[in-house]
Length: 114
Length: 469
Image 1 (cartoon, chains in turn orange, cyan):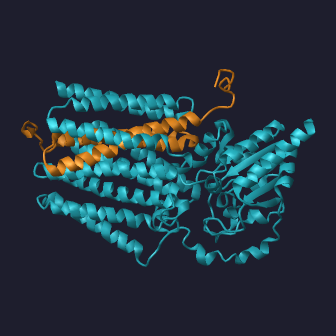
Image 2: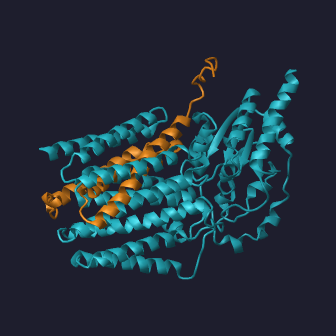
Image 3: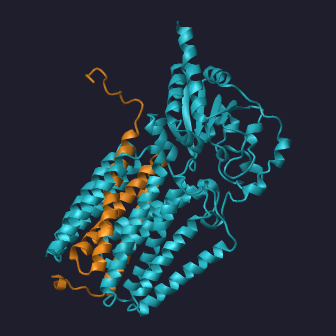
């Protein structure tokens, strides 16, 4: 079933484009992340962790191809590990950010029952 | 055609990731950032599942793996207490590295005959980084969770051994570029990488963990980017590069805040020296130490106009953050202005103190960074140092022989009066005597941080009730 997927060695063009993307994304990251206040450095780590679990796209593919036992087992481990990071990473970042409050924000009304 | 649409969706996802980090620049917009990231994720996963080439069993395996991952991810996202956040973050680096490492090895076995030298080299580096970050992060998590000893473990020739193994790894990567058919060598490479991860973290002590966690974060991002390069998946390149730079920036901030270099952190085994150096021999010339009881301290804090609280790892260990909030509330009810001074390396990970205090409902505008608050100390009436030590040691300014010389510190010694809550006179992580404790303006309040702060809060608020009656 897997025969119709042809993998070729990357052309020089593709490699250069990839390196360009890497370099520019690095610059972008530097400029954007520099502005994150120290206050939010822990949620920042949790969030970038969740984002880099986008390696899930590669894991899904290698698992779904189901080509050899080797690749399927490794793909399975990879999908489980990155799913943990995606789900856990976003949830924990949100949980942390919900705790950061300003003082002038009125406290939720205690008059509503319970 | 289908391929182009998928690439476009990946592009949208990459923009979502960029916005996600952009919105992290302020606590007010940060949660919007999570949403942007999540939308990007869902789009990218949907597009990936629409790719051709999956088998029917493959879909079943994917479904099972997603369910298992989600089932494990939910408790790791919702059930982990804030005090365990450093080890939780370290653990997520391990999972991330495991995923890219596993995919890297799988791709090598599948396509080593097809790949050109560039892909083979990048894949080799990716497997090396993935393996190293996997065990390194597990070690770091183990140390932070105190299932492994926090003390740095040193043996003779440690650094030479590490470099030799790293060198061997690089040689294997180079060899595989030319003879990829010797696939067994990839397994040797992975095994050596796992060993390097363990060896690199063994000599690292607790106070260096913020830097090391940030560096591991950076390596995890780089390995994801490397995988993206090999697979020509630009979304993965972008996400990895963003993760990599985030880790790098944090590591640089941590190093600057300790006035140390990466080399020194990774190979210097800071804190291993204190067994011999911390005899306390130079303490005699520093004068007597004054002590105070919690009610004396409460009285003085209440009298002043302003109190600055300096939290450190000791607050996290004692889980005193909620009591600290109570104290701050009680003082504010007395009309005292309360702020928190946060040193960048306070705790065990970047931003550790901020998260703990936010958990205790301290509003974030009261959490001030070292640069924001240092100029204010001369106007501050009372400082309460809570489980922090080296980050408030004035000898960092002038004691050239001190291991912490040159490290930027919080200028608490400029305040009018200083209270230090501490269990005993034991030296801090760096093993240096703290001049601040011998300052005539300083009084020590000995005891467990949580119970002392609780008593302070009771004293401050209790006396108010007495007066108002």
